[in-house]
Image 1 (cartoon, rainbow, N blue to C red):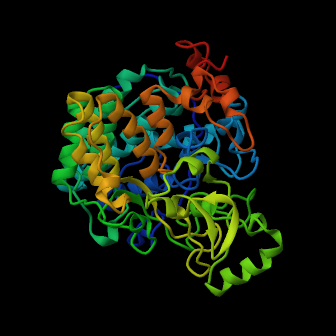
Image 2: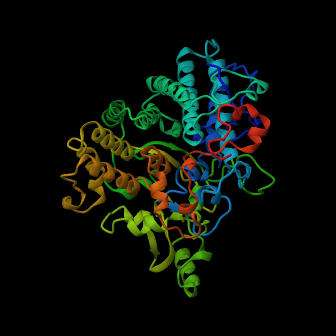
Length: 522
């Protein structure tokens, strides 16, 4: 299907895919339009290179998508005024600021990288289809995986920009540069078709040496999320129950274990991108010693504290440093992602999840800020600063249970919805009287879901998406108190979407034809 798109900057680059089996090779991160795959290995390297783009800082590698899905809501805020998170977190974004890139993270970087993946996957699908140099079974699986990756990116694009360029054919750059915006409903119709194809073909799980690739259940959860945003509650519930009843995934008995860096492929995690320490990626001379598309993750460093900020009693800083060192640890992060003031104050004191979502005392030292320890990795040997091996969790089963509870409540009220929310709450409290919900009206259950998703999925890049689809982002933000900025004052109704970056508009004015306001930013 040929519709309209943007001018994107596409360049040839090589980086490394997540799974250790593939670290011996340099997969194609960008596929040239004239590419012909002479073997299955050629095609699989192209897929691996496409996964590598997903791990760029602009998407899943650092806090690229976190900016859009968490900052500026009611869970995450920085511990100081930082320029590269301020425009979104403080709702001061405009077309020009969308182009400002810090550490390969900007609205523009995310836009470009999502479309780079789409460019790649269109070529992969075209070149693998009917290619007799590749066995039919392999062709089918490769096409399904590329189709999933394309659907994932278009889903993010519609979440962030609404109507957007959309094409599913192999185009030359001059054709791409003359494409405009397609309405969101049309894009999501294509995304659902892609996800349905991917789910019908992709495996339920992978061998250990290939973990990090998306399974059929990753496709299924995105499909369920789209149905829910469309308020197609029955389809959403059916898909959630399919995942709950047919997938190999189960809830872990202890919440903190879900985030254990030594058990990164536990049974609750539906999809997690694999990262590895000491694996270099694309070198950027502007940031010597730092890698932006390799296999070592930056994200834990964003949640790890900085020693210069802690503890609250500055006279104890040396003692805290010594205590950390004695444990083989260090506060060597940036501290730029901490629990928000509102989140820390409201998190239930008797909730067992609190201890890994709100850490304001460590090794007996009172801290200045409440940190989210579930994303920490303070181990100096296995996880040095900006060189973490920690995976990036994308989806997990607890999310699906809460989605099922919401769908059932919207369809029929709370009676049969309790079972799904209770499955999540049971491990969060010590006694049944604490976790069991009874006697709620449909609206009260709806509000319970608002809170439960906040406590359970904190910092996992779901919150702004939820607040937007519930239609309450503006109300929530306007009623919060923040540490440094005034998002409660600055937020406007159009902030549910981002602006298309100015450089894209300058290169391709057609992008403004369907909406001269650029999502309200003009």
